[in-house]
Image (cartoon, rainbow, N blue to C red; front, side, top):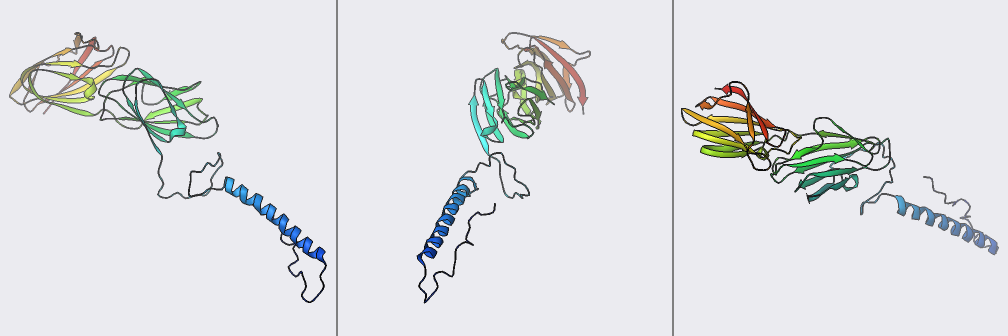
Length: 295
């Protein structure tokens, strides 16, 4: 911006020394000085109102910054705490936001600015309380476009968060969601004998070391309509350990186990057995498949 202060009209040689100077010259110079100060006041006020300063937050009003080199900068982190009901996740709170899912099912409504032809992107971290709760992404008038997740999905673990990139290029008309991390998690159920119950909420990859004949019960599957799958390693600390498998549904009553052909009932020492166990109806019907032994 070029300053509009007019200093050239001021006669810097007036008054002339040793001469009876006309007072009009004084009035003209003072008039030019006053006009210049008025222009300066307006320009300085405009700068104070619009210029970026280092002592406070700055709002650039959606104007472009070009040719900048950023060094040693960070993104704002927003901790949304524990939520137990439908919640609005707004872009205005910052590009990285975290929430603890304390109950469910619930919906996270995504809010973006209304300016089109700009990319608005935020990363959302979700953790649970070791209970499977359904979470869905939504937006007012929005189409949710997912890549590698179902919607809704389940948050279970308090230690293995699920992290999502969420963005739009059309002011939220289409919202794209991509999970950026692997949330499977690993849980070691330890050494057991007699009986033990393990839960889907402990992690999608689990292991056991059997110390003899053991009755295993699987529980904690997501409610009906959502698939919960566990990969289970079974080892034996003795020459051979036999086992049985039972299931509990979300109501806490017995489910039905359906086995693949030649499903094993024992594991030999030093021959780790790999099982895949899943349900899509809350544990009412549980499917069990063997991937064989690994020595």
